[in-house]
Length: 246
Image (cartoon, rainbow, N blue to C red; front, side):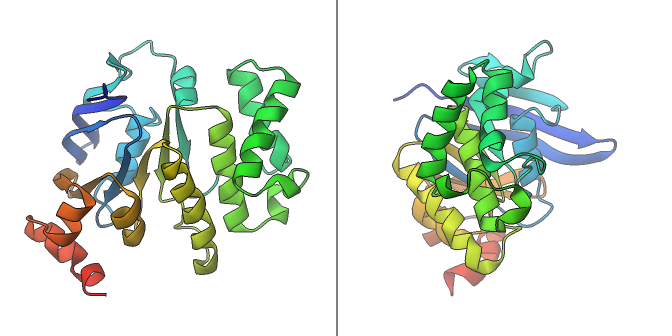
């Protein structure tokens, strides 16, 4: 059994009196594709933001190779270079070209020289099919292309884990497939991923582990086969009933 890369232990998050996450526990091993599903407002995106240290957990631990990164004094930028994140709204720098978007983090955080950063960026832009667009600005490309650039940018940091926060939710329906195709390819290459998604077919077909969240807690988790074919929790059954009957 591989040692886990990430362990979330008793994680809770409150905003004032509003408790968003309660006692969340799960483990991610190398090569796992963990999908987090559930209704809107169930805490899925907040969970990812806590794992990426964009939000500070109220209590609990986030262990990266056994070290609690939720402790004070952790270098968040260095940690995020190892646990990257792809956002639903792309978060590209609009004043930079596609290529510059994919090199700036490498140069600033990883301290790579310009040529090393460029070679790495080009490798991943080619992998996601965006190499022909290196001189374009974000406003000149489609939403699906922006998200593929965002994925290449995250990969160029050579992370151990990639977090995806509803990466297709801001896309027109015809562009969803091109992004999911890139993510399927990453899964086949063995990339460790945690994916918050409403794309149930992706969760069923690509995941190694599915987490169903409801009301800020993990209501049920297991293999895709367990959750999609024989969910035990009534809320899981209700949530998946529309998809399963489709």
